Amino acid sequence: MEIRGIWLTTTASKVFNSKQNIAEAMNFLAETGFNVVFPVVWNNGLTTYPSRVMRENFGVEINPQFQGRDPLAELIVEAKRVNLAVIPWFEYGFASSYQKQGGTIIAKKPEWAARDYAGNLLTKNGFEWLNAFDSEVQNFLLSLFLEVIKNYKVDGIQGDDRFPALPSEGGYDQRTVERYRQEFNRLPPENPKDPQWLQWRADILSNFLTRVYREIISINPELIISMAPSAYPWSYENYLQDSQTWVNLGLVDLIHPQLYWREFELYKRDIDRLVANQFTKQQLPQLIPSVLLKQSTYRIDSEHLVKALNYNRSVGIQGEVFFFYEALLEENNLLAKLLKSEFYSKTPRTLDIKEIKNNSFTHRRINSNYSYIDTSQPINLKPQFDWVEPFSEGIAAVKMGYKYGYIDKTGKLVSRLQFDNAQPFSEGLALIKVNNKYGYIDKTANRIIALQFDDAASFSSGMAAIKIADKWGYIDNIGKIIIAAQFDDAKSFSEDIAAVKIANKWGYIDKTCKIIIESKFDDATSFSEGFALVKFVNKWGYIDKIGEFIIEPQFYEADIFSEGLAPAKMGGKWGYINQFGEFIIPRNFDFAKPFSQGMALVNVGGELKQDLEQGKVYFTGGKWGYIRKP
Image 1: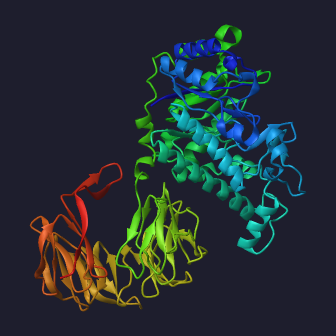
Image 2 (image 1 turned 45 degrees about the horizontal axis):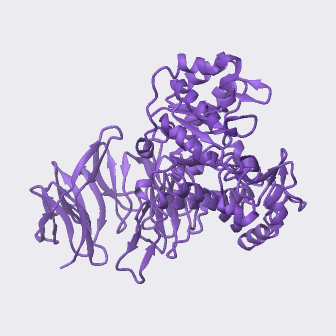
Image 3 (image 1 turned 135 degrees about the vertical axis):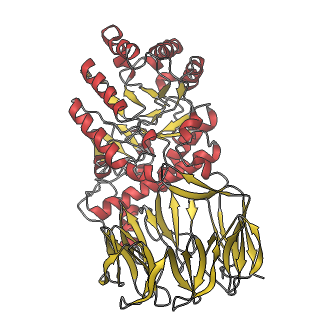
């Protein structure tokens, strides 16, 4: 889906001045080959639509120059007439005014002002700022967003480099200082770019964006959530915009980093960094960069524009958004003619919201919630995560978007959502993965064993299997190597025995690395309840601790013993066997998991499928439910 977008401003532009101007602009953009417009609806503390929120709070319903009209409604009618999507743009976000000492908003509500370290009204590059950490201020901005999506038939909503954002010099108001002191038992540092202080404030803004996202999709899940931050990581360090986290948590459908360089090589450098470091192949369709056409007396030259758009397409980026409309008209429509003759020569597809949403997480977040059953106390989690794992040692791994974290039994996060993978806690430590390296954290999310291994397993019996380069060994709970990396593969210790792979065959060692069962199996698992599941000549069976078969190899698939029973597959169906290999629960299931607390998860009607691209096999379809142990 190619995105061809343009911003429509009220600054240095006449588009909004009349209904006729709006109609002419929409005709021109459709003829040029665009398919989406981003009209400004909020700047300088004023709206470009009649706002009940503004009227009730500040007595000003609309920007006075548009009094008696509704430019947003007029634009929507004209845009839809020529098949242009409309995504209203909240240009100023948390900035209340420009060179007006805070304007009408701070004059009426001075307690809403953001403060720098000296206690002054936070001002940067001429913009005066509202306190983006204040709940009243957040509610006010959110109410403007919701007002637009409830009252107008729009296709989405867009934040900017000022939403959610705050210059990193801010956050020194009394409420935010006290909030930080209560959490860390100290005052915020004077240095506004102290790493912990930066991340803490950026997380507040990311949490607010999460709330905005959820409120919007609860009203209309088909709306596109679009953000246009400055380039990361500059935006994070200077405006607390952690856009990497926004993408990783699945909070945006489209993101338009403002790559406003006047030299092509600098633009190319940022695109390369975004594609290589910030966006995975799966996330790349969300990246639609912003290209600067005009700013003050500057206007992009044709050669630069051609290079930028060609480069976008060469790396798989499907479109761009331009700042801003008036540049297309200069020199007898020079840039518009260039776009129409080259890049936009084919009639654009109407913006396909469903196709865009296919790359997002919205469909997973509607009417979803998780409950834990058969625990000592009922635990119900609000639909704030995309996936939750079972609790282990009082903590559960959770996932939102592409990232994992951990929660306690109240649902409170005990770590940031920052890991690429996260395993259950075992013996006080949890295995985590970040950027293809593995390490271990404790229950306060402190990294006890640094990210250093190429693969690893959870702790068991005081040891954990780890991979260094292409060999496996074992470490203790402070990261010291106890058994050198020497095996082709290795499983966790259980009952003081571990399965290891040597020369393409599996056997078992004890904690001194002594081989106690010779390597002769095609596959093997850890011991459980005195049995180990092993594969021999393409069938699965169970051995004891001296390597003798207790249950002969006969199953197509099987799993470990738990609570005296093990799931096993024979004749295309799963059932449960006892220690003599007898099916105590008949083979009625298409998939089955081991028992836990007297219950086991089973599936009827599903099937195994292979993901050729990922090289993985996964189970899908059917109906899942729990059975009780007989």
